[in-house]
Length: 165
Image 1 (tube, rainbow, N blue to C red):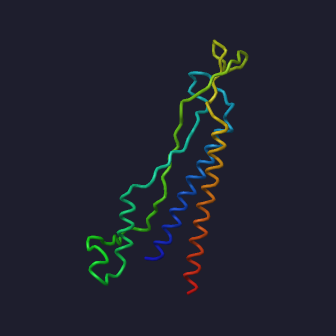
Image 2 (tube, rainbow, N blue to C red; image 1 turned 120 degrees about the vertical axis):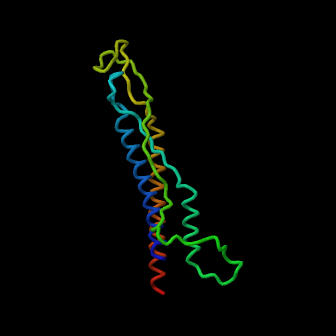
Image 3 (cartoon, rainbow, N blue to C red; image 1 turned 90 degrees about the vertical axis):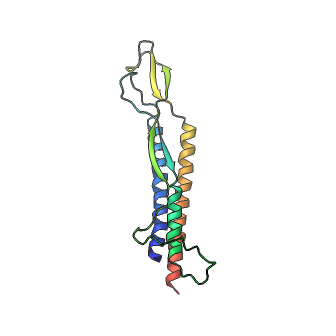
């Protein structure tokens, strides 16, 4: 079962990479559309987006731990609980985060009476995007992406050294 454990580490890091890549993509889209106007009530136009990530369910961790403990040999009664059993039918487990993209209905209004999307009061609707916040999210996601890549490199080094024995 060693290959399953190793591949689950890669899958977990891959899920982390996917979340950070999507955070960078969403921040880029928000920055690109900061000055995209839309007519009020048209239903068209850009809505600010954000990435919602969630940790896996705690039962996943318990299942992975039980699976890992089930493959060990029991030499003394005190070492492991007999209630822990291996689930041999399940494949490698990924413990990485899950993601979803949420859209917000937040807009800012600017007075531009000659704009084609201006309403009868001369106000134009733009997505309410804070450039500083988006840049901060982008830099943070980039750093976390690099951290996930480092964990993959470390895992590769562990595999490489274990094969040299």
